[in-house]
Length: 121
Image (cartoon, rainbow, N blue to C red; front, top):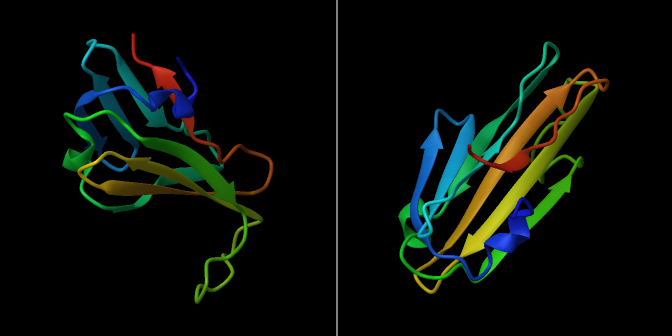
C-alpha cells in the first residue's frame, strides 16, 4: 500500500506531525507510512495547516482518504512571488471527526512541489 487512498478501511494507532515536514501514520498492523517531501535546493514544501484534530483519526477505521492539489491562489490570498506554487490537501475522516492537512510548496518552477506517501522501513 503506497497509495494514500488505500488508508480507507485501515485503523490507525497513532498520527504524528513532525515539525511540519512529515506526517507519520501508524496502523494497527504495526506498519508505518509517512507523508513527506524530499527537499532539494530550490523549493520549499511544508505542512501549512491542519484543520481538525489528528487524534480523531486514531482507533476507528478511516472512512475518507483523499488527495487533492491545485496551483491556484486561495481566495483572499495574494498571488505568491514564486515562479511555481502548489497546494496539496490530504482529507481524512473517521466517525470521530474530519482532518484536512494542507501542504504548500513553492519553487522556481524546475523542482517538484509534490508530497510523497511511502511506507517507513
